[in-house]
Length: 257
Image (cartoon, rainbow, N blue to C red; front, side, top):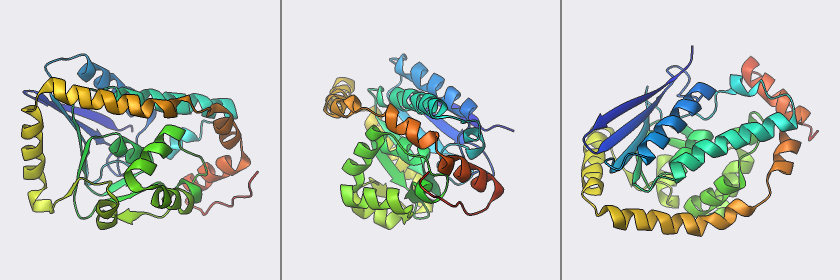
């Protein structure tokens, strides 16, 4: 059974909900495809003024469904996988409207990147953030994602989280600057609504200009060569062991090979 990408349109606001119940909204390939399609539809619709991105079942998103990664058998497969992830992330980054991420529960791996690509993050006290791949499946994340996490968390904290796999709570994420606002569960939806209404009333050209300038400032990072690193990581025995161990719910044994 695959997850779903649910769409709700209310006047000028589109809400995209990632839903994969029982898997903390792990994102499978079909969900990534649906997400990219919806993001491109929003991009082409001039009547949309705000995008809200959230998860169902009490969580934001737990990253890529690991069972999908079991199909990666070579470095070339890994390079293609990362290129597909880059297309989805680029579709989100290409929007020139405000993106509000509503984070409850787990926000890790690919979910962390989606939140990082959002403009405003409103989170509940139970939210948790990180990317534990160094202690789970042994893959990597893109150079652009690392640069964005450096900017949002600070280089020291971002590096620690990526290398140790430590998951931080909402208070630490707020202190670091990753979260825009931390709101009690009872007030979360009202805060989201107030924020969305204010954004929807903002001057569209002003908002678009800010996002365009931010995109131009980020563009230099896109020139970094990455495919050779992806090939090495995804062709490794460590990565295959990490995926198999995760599926079998056993601790991985990384050797650097």
